[in-house]
Image (cartoon, rainbow, N blue to C red):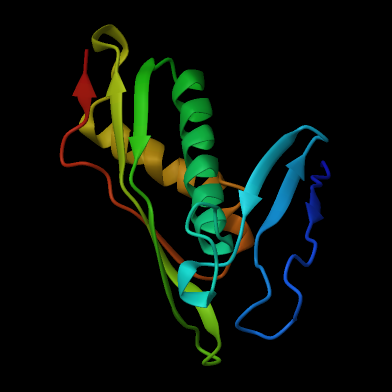
Length: 155
């Protein structure tokens, strides 16, 4: 298989180090050049201008599902013109009563080329297969639900 790495860099920017005052901003560096500002969620004294770990978790699931969906669709001969998703993660408590992302809802909306579009049943099957074979969703134990739009679009 493959290995995936990133560099995380944080430096104290406040004179003190109390819970209320230490800065949460840090850099996530991918491939030595792609930098992403990261922080805690605002509820935990983080910077709303940066991505928080919970958002990154939801983003990785949504991205993995999309990439897997596109791969399966292309191999089946379908042509996707656009793909959008409004993904939501819910922070709650797991079965051990520990804080966790307990539910992720993906809401993809896909536009296909009219000459190469699946039927409604094939569309549902594409999402089911994408969910079943997405590396990230197979790596977690929490609930991931894919809610497909009532209708797919074709152009």
